[in-house]
Length: 435
Image (cartoon, rainbow, N blue to C red):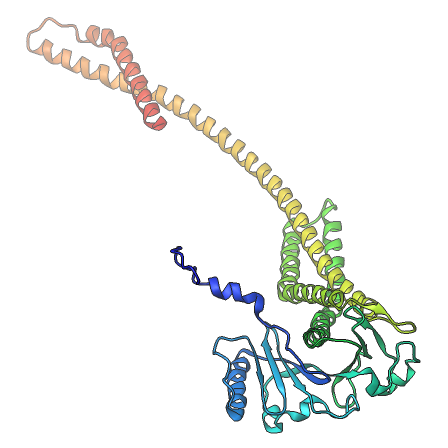
């Protein structure tokens, strides 16, 4: 009997995160099997319509449809089995069929899907592939046989392949799009289990879509190469002009700012694509590792083919992205140097201006002191005159006062009082300024 414990409430995302490891599980297949794979690029509106289109197929065969927020779905229909996955940039459909002819690619699984429903799937095709998992006896395949007869299944093209899954199967392909618009994978079953077969086909289709998605950055890289060279030359011209004594710093700073904006626009516009290409390339490498390839004498393995064809393109994308980042850093350094130079020039101008202002202030102080001296003399003169007038008035009233003598004696006292008052006013002004 199960014991129930009183534990804290569940986090809202607990079960969703826990079950994420079981999402997009590989299908359990009966052998032999044919598979058709479609990867489609869709807009946001087309993704919404895609769910309605899936529901129409389910209603047609009486199968429960996927939930509204589901991003993967698997179901068995009358004559075929289907898996659907919705990724960030594309959606994928994998169709499986079991009642097929012995010829690997004459009766693909897609023939079992209703034609009218298939024709109304939205989006643009990125990858379309057929895979045929056959028994070795059905195509008279032997481990050490001459592999040239297998090229007939690939329109005579050179094939690549290897033993995979610990020798339980052999995989062959030419990585070409044939006249029907589909690429082809031929899987020869030696002793595959049903679960292994589903995982193997899933990995092969993953390699196909992820390598194409990784290569979506390559045309962008080739287009950006002339822009990179142009920016590099322009930066060299600007930095070379910075060393000249008679350059126009303001003009060079404007050019640097415009160049920085242009380079940052290229980086921000294409950074997502380059980062996605790197992530997809890593997924391709991981899927190749998961195949556990063993060489078949005389042909390249899938991993060798990818390394020779895909790695140079990815290196080009990484190089362009890295070099744009370096150019951006160099522009930033040059801008910093230019701003420092302009700041030094402005500081020198400010120092000259401050020196000029200090000289003018000093002159004004001297003039003010001179005016204060003259003002003190004038005030003393008028104050002494007032004292003299007062003395004359007292003499007229009968006081025995010598007006001229009183006026002369008052002058020193008036000067002392005025000087003391001026000093007092200066102290009040200084204390008010300090506050």
